[in-house]
Amino acid sequence: MRTQRAAVVYNPVKVRLDQVRRAVGEQERAHGWESSRWYETSSEDSGVRAAEDALAGDPTLVIVAGGDGTVRTVAEVVHGTGAPMALLPAGTGNLLARNLGLPLNDVDDAVATAFSGATRAIDVGVAELENETGERRTHLFLVMAGIGLDAEMAENTTVLAKKRLGWMAYVAPIARSVIANRLFHLDYRVDAGHVRSTRAHTVIVGNCGTLTGNMLLIPNAKVDDGLLDVVMFRPKGRLGWAGIGTRLTLHGLAGRSRFGRNVLGLAPDLKALGYAQGTRFDARFDTPRGIELDGDGFGLVTRARITVRAAALDICTRADAA
Image (tube, rainbow, N blue to C red; front, side, top):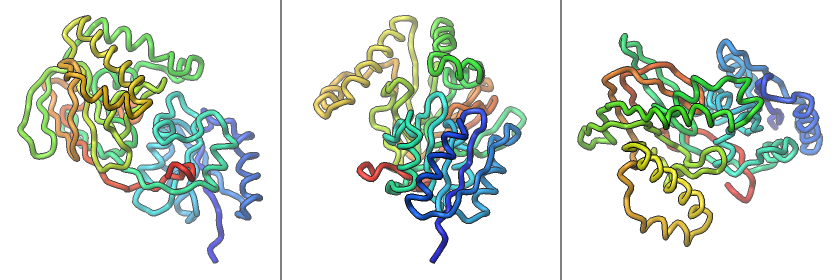
């Protein structure tokens, strides 16, 4: 019989390690597992080496204690191996955990879910990026890829501000971006459709739909439907932003009930807010644009191809939510 043992990959900046060690030890004893092995992430590689070392030990389960960026980095190593991941949210947004209905502010509950919850297969987004020198890179994401406002927030919000203020640290960069309202040109295509041209303030390709503060940005996004959901912000001045704000508020209110979602489905399309859905999104930018993946900035790009790998990562969730 195979020895049951967890590997814990943790971000030392985000995690209260003594609290996590206590909770993990209690669950090990309760379930008869061997002592877990612990791997600290490094800022030099965002946790890649820690994830590789953890996986090399052939763990029954990989527990990730950190924010969305740490989760994304570990998933880049673990996905497709068959080893399930469990989340101990310790970041600013914790968007993947939020979208999966996992415990957000309770270490004991989160660790208990890791050891005794059910396993659910979710999709993984793949971003193939090219910069102006022709250099190409490929990275994964689990929540969202963002160009425009999202990327500016990732680049311009400090770790210290996020630690002290939480999601409120994003208010100032959002306000500056909305006031400036600088749109950029892009040519894009969804799946094998026609190439289209537009000007946008922000483009987001989502695997999940809910943001910090439980704001529902993409109502149709599901983490396990094998599809990507694209939303473009295309406001024309303050009235355009007012319309976007009103519609997103309605999304949040209506998304809480089936009746509300049905009513929202009858609302007319908003020109300032465009949606599309598919398995591939290609985009080319006239001038290099910043891009972020799950809250981490990845520099300037001139081209991006974003695809989805369906059911590529196993995640531990609450037994009644799997």
